[in-house]
Length: 564
Image 1 (cartoon, rainbow, N blue to C red):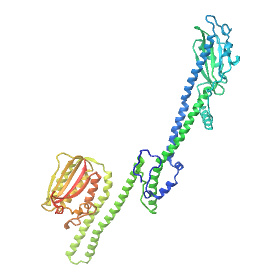
Image 2 (spheres, rainbow, N blue to C red; image 1 turned 180 degrees about the horizontal axis):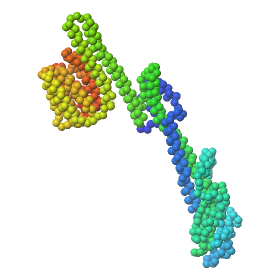
Image 3 (cartoon, rainbow, N blue to C red; image 1 turned 45 degrees about the horizontal axis):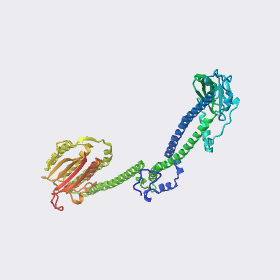
Image 4 (cartoon, helix red, strand yellow; image 1 turned 180 degrees about the vertical axis):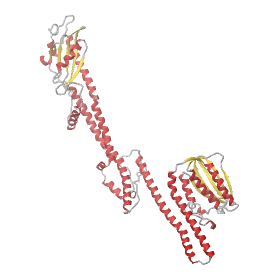
């Protein structure tokens, strides 16, 4: 199995797992899965849809705003203005210096001959007006000079089914929106004539409009000057649809680019969807397979979550979290099963004793024997009551630790209060009780009542192993970010083989006089509470540093470490 990736980029299902790590049904489902199976994944459809929507909105926005058209229009308008001014310069160059000129009468210049000598592209027209705004001549009536072809100036425009389809679609969509230019059947002369008054005032004017077929026409009117005097106006109109052809070429190229981008986006979306949707589908399918098997009670088995922890992303984290959660759940189930078995075993002992005592009570005749059997019955009943109470507390402990809210409290004050109360009980037994606590408060965050239960268990446990003349010592010290609380006694100590067993449920090794007085759950509960607070607890025997490890211990020591 792959344990690490060399890169943080995950493409497709680049993860592997051993044959035994994945359910057979899930493995067969993976083999049947293809790229087309993503259409059954709502998450995959959302990824593809949102990516396509982003591309479509971008393409529609660019096409609607037409930034390339504005640039082309500006260039064409500048070009036709220059052409009109050059035509006006032709007329001005033929005027005699200092002599009066009348374009309408032909005095000083032949306007029709000049018009015929100006080369214009096919479809473009020139109009000449006198100072009274009357039309003198035009290329549409008087003829025009033949245009010499220029090699390499032809607009090369390929036509494909894709471009024609996209262009038709764009034309249909753009027709839904209003345009700023008025559509007229044939208004070249009228458009230019509307510009003449401003041109007679010495200003060059330009306008545009659409003809009956929707093609754009540009019109310019510029003055003809003789010195400082305006003697006429030259009007020039462009070829119909010239700018539209250029815009269409740019638009089709842009559409082709967006089509390619959309195809690439779909491909990348499929890869992304397989990278995200397929592993998530496997995680969900693994949980569903385990749920269905256990629900049907047919060959129930453990849920095996695919191991995707090698992925350096959130799915890898999710896989690890699910695996850990499922593992913790099964550990809890196993622990509960073991706990139930231990409870049954522990309850059977006093029940067996009770059954035997009750059966014997029916047969005995002597009163002293009856009293002894009643004492046994009473002892076993108390033992059962204590056992059931401790089992109930232990079974509720997990849920209560989760539900209760942690709060900061003074650990030193809590230990002082416990020592004052428990010390009195120790003195009644003839056991010295010694405390060595810091004068400064030590504030920790946790469940004060639960931690108090821990120290009550440890102190009462130490006192129970002491005899008259022994001593119990409780002391605490803060070490950096941890605090140590130690409970020591001068009792018989703990057998070496039992140092790790004392925290096991129902384990109890007591003097003969204390048999049945303890359930063996106190230290197990204490360990569970301490570990729930992020702490540690351990037991050890007290020996001098230079003592023989096989010598008798001087007592027992229990150490609790808690984070501050």
